[in-house]
Each structure stands twice: as C-alpha cells, then as structure tokens.
Amino acid sequence: MSHGEPQGNAPSGKLVVRNIGLVLSGAIENPILDADTVVAEGGRITAIGRAKDVDTEGAATVIDANGATLAPGLIDSHVHPVAGDWTPRQSQLNWIDSSLHGGVTTMISAGEVHTPGRPKDVTGLKAMAIFAQRAFDAFRPSGVKVHAGAPVIEPGLVEDDFKEMAAAGVRWLGEVGLGAIKDGPSARQMVAWARKYGMNSTIHTGGPSIPGSGLIDKDIVLEADTDIVGHINGGHTALPDGQIRCICEGCKRGLELVHNGNERAALYTLRVAREMGDLNRIILGTDGPAGSGVQPLGILRMVSLLSSLGEVPAEVAFCFATGNTARLRALDCGLIEVGRAADFVLMDKAQHSAGKDLLESVQLGDLPGVGMTIIDGLVRSHRSRNTPPATRLPQIV
Image: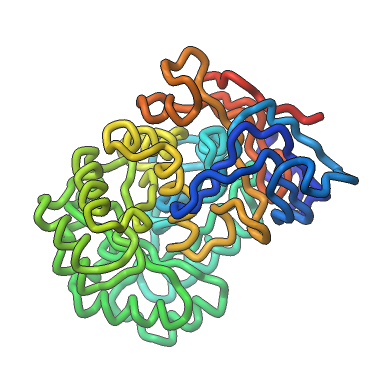
C-alpha cells in the first residue's frame, strides 16, 4: 500500500469479512467469540456472528479470511513520534508503516520528545502539543491512527493551560518526569488538572532513559496518580521488584509493559498482576523509536513473550494489546463489538511453527504471520513484509 492517505479519511462502504477461523474479541472477560463473520458499515462494526445469522448483502468489499484469525487491530500505547512517518532518533523513514505490517493500527504518543530543539517554555510546549495533535489528525501514515500531541509538563503550567490545550483537542499528557517536573506534589497537581479536562496521562517509571532524564521511583509514581504507569518494566532500567509490587498494589491504574524495557521485570509485573486478579490492567507499548531502535513487530513480540514465558493463554495476551488498552485509554477501537471502529488484523500461525494453530504457536513463543490489516473498514495492508509468512492468507473476493 502507498503511504499517507490514498483513500482519504472518508468512511468506507459495507465490509464483510467471512470464513474467519477464530475471532479474538480483545475483551479479557470473554476473549474468544463464537463467530465466523464480521460486518462493518461506515467504518464501524455492525454485526458479529455466524454467516447465516448476519446480513451480508450489498457489501462494497468482501474478504474471505480463508480460516485465518481476526483480532482487533493492535494498539501501541507508547510511541514517540515527531513528524509524519519519520524519526530523527534513528534517521528512519516509514517506521509507522512498518508497524502497520506488525498488526498495529493505533498508536498513542507518550510525548514528541525527540523533536529537535523541543521547546520547554509554557507557550512553546502548548503550541507544539496542539501542532502535533493537528498534524497527525490530518495525516495518518498508511492509515494508522497516531494519537499525538502529548505535552511534557514543565514548571509554570497553570490550570488554564490544561483547559486551553484540552479545548484545542489535546487528549494526552506525555510522560510525566521527562521534563523538569520530577516531584510528586507538582506532578499530582498538574495530572489532576489534566484529568479535570479529559486528558489521559502517563508517567516515566524507573531509571533515566537517556542522559538528562532522571529516576522516577514508586513514591513519585503513586503520588502523581497518572492514568497509566508508563513502562513499569523500565524504559530501559526497571525499579527493584519490591517497588514494582508496591506500585501494583498501591494503585489501580494501568500497568504498561514495553518492548524497550526489562523483560524479566515485565514477567514479574505480569505475575503480580495475575496474583491480584488484575490482568485487565496490563497494556503494551514499544517505547520506540528510541535507543533500542524501531520495532515493527514490538507489540507482537510482547504478546508472544508474555504468553510463552508468562504462561498466559495467547487469547488473553492479545487482550493486553487491544481491549485493555482501549478501555484504560478511552479509545473507540480495540474490541470486536458492535459500534466500535472497524480496525482489524487478520493473522495465522507462521508457516512451519510447532504450534498446531495460531494460539498454540504464540504460546510456544512464535510470532504469528500477519495477512491483512483493516482500519475504519478499509484494507490498509496485505501480506506483511515483516512477520514470518502466515499459513493461511485472507483475500479480497
């Protein structure tokens, strides 16, 4: 597929995806649906069920899934975009398009912090947040929904600044702690102002990511009370296990595990959350582009890691990358349910995987093969150039 907006943002006509082998719902309380057909109109899901029970007449597009699995498009809860589909951090073009080929259809900015010369004064940071929100709202690289415009809080911000940004369409706070606000009380006040105006927040958790950033420990995390505990497994350096447990037990916020973090700490967090009966709090991000590079398959790799080494059923691990994030981040995608955005990834077990089917292959640690992505009811990519080849591929009839 070409980059940018070849088909525009216009809602699609009626879409029917039939002959689906397995439907993963994204909802952790009921991760597998009894269905083989999904219908969408105007970019929204209108029906889910058996082919004989749903209205498939008059479709503009019919996709034969050929027995492959349909899941909600994956959500990357933690990216650092800059301008369009380019990152100066790794001098790389088309990293967002590459992530689409890893099944990611939605990304959430944790701050446009890699922008060269990033302004840190109040006027400048507000302008940059509004600019980034506007730019990515108007330009969706390869159709991917990039929720950008995530200001990093700095001293001098007052309540009216959050009101102004929210009114302009800014929905997110960048990682608390990446700016000069690194103390609990100041962070808590600003996070509360942001929440009052409907902004969703996250925090840098753990050791410094790059020279110039600082340690954010459990006390600051708990006092700041952001909606998401950003990279609780460190980005890159994790807090001690005791502090991770304190955070898990001390709040009921989202627990974000990232690819660019400490994998052992991610598995430890998963274990604590499971003990607490709180797997609904686990969400996934890449924290890229960053020093570790760009990870087109980062979200799939986290799903496979947590399923295979964390001993979580694969259908549950996929919820970490879809419905859990959608609920904690207040998104209209991420779940296969009527009324939600028609954002899907079609995938199957990789050729020659030891697993007998997609779920078993992921639980054995393999990556699935992505065969197609769909955003707002429009086909955005076909067979992935990045995943191992899928056993079965969907096709447009």
